[in-house]
Length: 364
Length: 129
Image (cartoon, rainbow over all chains, first blue to last red):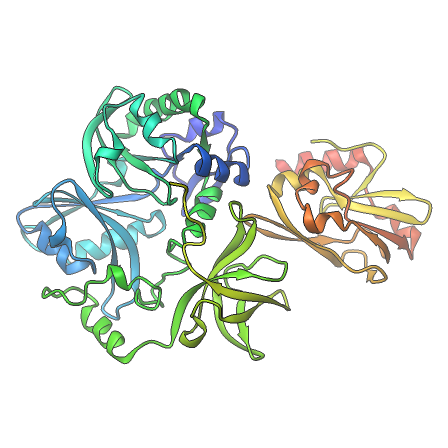
C-alpha cells in the first residue's frame, strides 16, 4: 500500500503529476521539470520531502550510539547544529547517507532517505544499548524544503527566523506561518541558500500554502522530485541507489571528507575503511560532460580502449548548463579532470570528458 | 488532449499524416504530455528503412528514455533536423513543427491497421481507466 504525505491534497490541487516513489505517492512535477529547476536557481522553490524518515535517539548514551553508527565525527556537533554523515556496515559500504541533528547532548534526530527508512530503523535499533533509546519518529514529522536565492526573503515574511544569522547546517526552534514549534534548519539538497522546515503533520498544509502565497511575488514555485534530482545532480550530490549503495564505499564515492577515520572512537565500518584507505582503491566516482549528443543514464557502461571500464550512476540534461552531465565510476587513472572516455548509449559510443564538480556554481 | 481529425494514430501514441505515398510521423499530444520536457531526440538517417512496429527513434525527457515505434513500413525521405537543436518543439507543437520523420510507404495496405481520431480517443479513455 502506498503512503501519502500530509500535503498530498495540496499537490493534487496544484495539478502535480503523482508517481510512486519508494512506496509514497509523490509529486514528480507540477509545471515541468525544467521550469521548476530554473525557478529554484533564479527565485525559490518549495519541496515536500515529508517522505524522508526521522530516527530519534535520546538518553544519556545517545551521543555514544551516534558515534558508533556514523562515519563523521558527531562529537564536533554543538547544540542546534547538524552534520552530513553516513551509516556504513562492517564491510565499509554504505547503508545510507543521513543528516544528524543535535538538539542537545541527549537528543539527536537522524534524517534518512525514504527508500531506506525501514532498513535504517532496523539497523539503528539493532545496535542500540541501554541509555540510548531509538524510535522511528517519521510519522511525527512533515518536512518542507524552501530553497533558492529568494528563500530567506520569503521565509522572513512568515517567520522571525533570519537564515543569514544561522550558520550553515545550524537550526533553531521557531514558529513558521503561525505554527509553533517548527525546527528550521539551514540545510538543503540544491546548492542554493535556503532551509528545511520540520513541523507536525497537521501544520504542514498551513506552512506550505502560506509560503506559496507569500512567496508568489518573489517567483516561488512548488517543485517535484524530477527537478529535485536535476538540482542535486548539478551539485554532484550523492543519491542513495546511484552514487552510493551497499556495494560502494564512501571513499571511492568521493566522500572521504565525511569519513573521519583519524578520530579515536571506533565506529561500524572503520576497520574496513582504514584497510581500504591503506590499500588504495581501483575505481573512483567522477563527474563528466558529454561531448557528443545524447544523455547518459544510470547503468550505461563507461568505455575506454574498446573495453567496458566503469558505469554511469546518474545522468541528465542539465537545465542550468544546457549540457549532458553525469556521474560514474571509472578506474582511478581516468578520474582526473580532462580524462577522455566514452559512454555506451544504447550501443553507440559517445565521447565524454571528466570535469570538475560541482557542475554548477550557484550565483552568490 | 488534442487529437486532430485529419490524422491516423497507433496504440504507441504516434500519429501519421498521409499525403499520397508519403507519411509524416510524430508523437501525439498524450505522448508528449506523458513524457514531460523533451531534451533529446534521436532520429534515423534519410534513406534508412523503418519497419512497422520497429523502433525508428528515441525521445528522451529529463527523467526517461522512450522508444518511438514506426506506424508503417517505408523509406525515410526526410527527418526533422530542427529537433536536434530544439527538441522542445515536440512539447510545444507535436502535430506541427514537432513532426519527426517522413517516409515513403512500402506497403500502403498497412494503413488499415491505424486508428482514426475517434478510435484513438476511445483508446486513450480505456487506457486511463
